[in-house]
Amino acid sequence: MANERRRMGGRGQMPVEKAKDFKGSIGKLFAYMKQYHAAVAVVILCAIASTVFSVIGPDILELSNGLLAKIQGTGSIDFTKIGQILLFVLGLYLLSTLFSFVQGWLMTGVTQKVCYRMRKDISEKIDRMPMAYFES
Image 1 (cartoon, rainbow, N blue to C red):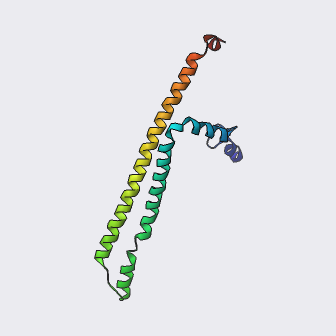
Image 2: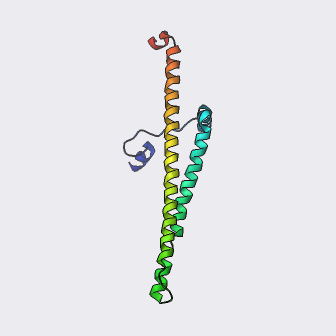
Image 3: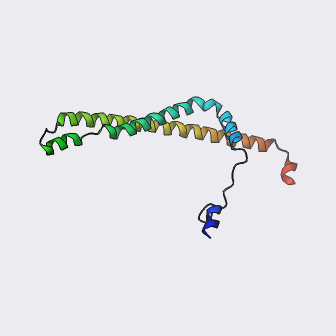
C-alpha cells in the first residue's frame, strides 16, 4: 500500500504526470518572457547577493575569541571590537534583507505581468475560434 501511495504522489493525490517536452516548454516560456529578461537577471543577481551576505554574516561573528581568552586568563574582552563586529554584521544582514526584498518585489511584478498576458492571449484565442468548435 505504501508503494501505491508513493507512485500516486503521496496522500491520496493524483499520480504525477511528467512533462512530455520539458526543455521545449521552458524554452517557449523564456521566449514568452523575452521582455522581462533584464528584470530576471537582476533578480538572479539579488538572490546571489542576498545569499552571499546571509552566509558571510555568521562567519564574521567571532565573539567567542575574547571570552575564551578571558576564561583562560590570557586576555580580555574588547567591547569596542565587539561593537564594531556587531554593527558590520547588522549591515550585512540589512543588505541581505534589502536584496531579498528587491528580488521578491521584482519577481512578483514579472509573474503578475506574465500571467496577465497569458490570460489575455488565451482569451483572444478563444474569441477568434468559431462558435461551431464549441457546439461540437
